[in-house]
Structures are given as structure tokens and as C-alpha cells.
Image 1 (cartoon, rainbow, N blue to C red):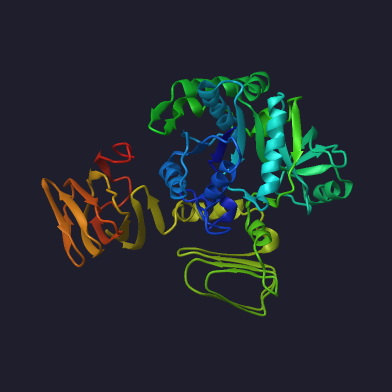
Image 2 (image 1 turned 120 degrees about the vertical axis):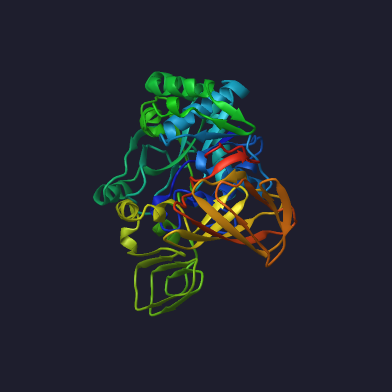
Length: 472
């Protein structure tokens, strides 16, 4: 089986922790590993699983490759989606690539990168059953027995006989309102739609050809015109953006006649909201979940998450508090399943608060924006061992570097020299420069920028170890 890991989501319902340039799948929300790392390791423990094919946003490509490398894993290919078009085009493109490399009979497993599975053995057993059904030509999905009337999930209507290991799907149901969800729970025969699938590459392509031919035609063209850059497969934006923005359920699965469901009772959650995180983590005697430096008094049934400083509460019930370095969310737990309207309001007020954190990750390390004002900006830059920033220049700003710890190799015009702790250098606007860390320990510097424009797009790259574009 070739695992296909879907990692294109932005996780807006977990704002302010999850943001567009650092979404939830790349964060350690449940346990020590990130969600994408847990997903890949879980699938790789399945006997016969090949290295995964990963789909992600182009902005996340180095983060995705780096996080797999951290746990000793790698992808066969990382398909870069130039624009978000839903799961249907993403899966169609992956199926075309897998058919070309492995043949039409190859089994594909579709697994979102941001799900929680608490019982590994039950999960692997269910996947093996799904593989057997896929080999017989079925399109297989996984249904989770519901334990509450959840309005944030789609549902599968299935007549599953007692102790049966699979059954045909009678109907795919959109996310219901609260009253409808309650009726599903009381009536029975409804399962949460997990968003995971198993099928042959040829089977799903045949279904696309029958039920979503436009999507298939566009994705086939996009794959044929893709540019391959080592492990990265770049789909052309001019082609891929023409694909309908559809889910695989809507485009194919709910119309196909060969669809089967395998029940999955393995402690599944899509970790799609703060309520889902609250439900998934251990609670104290007052039914609170606390993460970070938190002190509670007379507080119950609440989630308090602090990544920055201390949070103290008094006399609260049923509340979510999420504290980051530049934003704080305070909400009633009954309102956190859908934060999209709030996040959109924040985006309109201050786009940066939904785009990135104070700490921004780059393939060479990270930087923190410490302070800024009219004509200046201060950053704390961490360069990982053995990494280099691009050889670059700026048209609108000058920079002053001060080394805090480590040894910096500095390229400045035609000179190359080292700076140790407490030493500094000045880079005038328009001067070619590069920062490198050739030592075994991280390099930390403080960068002070001055100029009439300090945006990140004022970078002209002349050389780059990560094959980023000249102005990318």
C-alpha cells in the first residue's frame, strides 16, 4: 500500500495556535511528536506500507520534509499544491502519480496528517480489512461509531449487521444541525465520516472519469506538466487552479456504487477544534485540561493552554483560554467548534495574526519578530547547525547583525569572515550578503533592520541551498 498523507489544511478552528504558515499538523498538540509525525509513523508500522506520498501547501514544503526527517522518515514524493482546491483534486493528482509509478493495481491509502488515533492495533486491523476490500475493486472509507451528537463531522448512513466487519455505504450526509445529529445518535445506523480512504489507483481514477471528469482531466494535465525538483513535485498553478474546489466525498464517493465502509472504533478524532483537544486529553479533578504555566482557582470543565507566560484563572466554568506570544483566545467551550467567523474578523483587522506567529520557521531555522516601529524592525534569528541563508540583497533596507551565541560565517560582498559572540557587522542596502552556521550548535543573532520598507518580500536571492525562487 502507498500511503497518501493529506497535509494541505490551515486549521483555522485552532487559532491562535494554528495559523496559515504554521498550521496544526506541524505542531505537537497531543504528545511529544507533531500530528504529521504521528500519522506517518502510524502508517509506516503497517506491514507492506511503502514510503508515503505527501500533499502539502507550497509554503509548508520544507517544514513537512524536515519534520519527517526528524523521526527518521521520508516521502517518496511531496506534491506541492499551488492553490487549495479541496481533497478531490489533491487525491486525483496523487492517483495519477501513483498509477504512473506503481501501476493501476497499486493500493492507495488516504490519511489526513492531523488526526488522532489512540488505539494503534485496532486502526491497523481496520486498514488491513480495507486493503482486502480495495483489492476486490471497492472504494473503502472508515466510519467512526459516534459517542455524541457532533455537528462538526459529516456522517455515513450504513446498515451494519452485528459483528460485521464492513458494509456498503447507503448515504454520505453533510454536517447536520444539532437536532438532526441527535436524531442520528438515537436512531442508530450513522457513523462519523473519518475522511480516510483506501482504494486502487485505477479504481479511484475510473470513478473520477465517471463522476468528476473535469477534475480528472485538469489534474491529469497538471501532473503531466509538473516540474520535479528532487522529492518535490510542483503542479503548475495555471492548470491546477482550474480544478473545481470539491471534496472527494462530494465529487466521487457519494455517487459511486462500489463504496464500502469499515467501522473504526480506535479513539479517532480529527483534532479539528479546541473542544476536540479538550476531549482527547487527561483532565484533573475539576475536569480541567491545563497545558503550560497555568494556575486555577475555583475553575472547572475548562481548557487553559499557555505557550507564553503564566495564566491564572478564578471562578470560571466551561471556558477555553489559549495564550500565545501575540494573541489570546477566550471563548465558551460551546462556541469553539467553529471559530471561522472570529478568525476572519481577526484577519480583516490584522492579517499577520492569522498568517504567522511571532516565531516564523524557515528551512534554515527560525526568527522571532521582537519589536518594530516606523523605519525599524528587530529580529532574533536562529540558524540550525550546518545551514545557510540564501545569498541575497535588499533594495529598501540595511541590516545590523549582532552575534549572541555560536559562530557566524558572514559573506559580505567579496569578503568572507567569522563573527563570535558579542561581535557585529553592518550590511548596507543593496550589498550582497549571506549568513551561515557551519558549527555543530545553533547560531543565535540579533538583527536590526532599518529602511523605508521592511517587508519579507524585499529579498532578492542570488543563490539558495533550498532551491527557492529568486524572489520567493
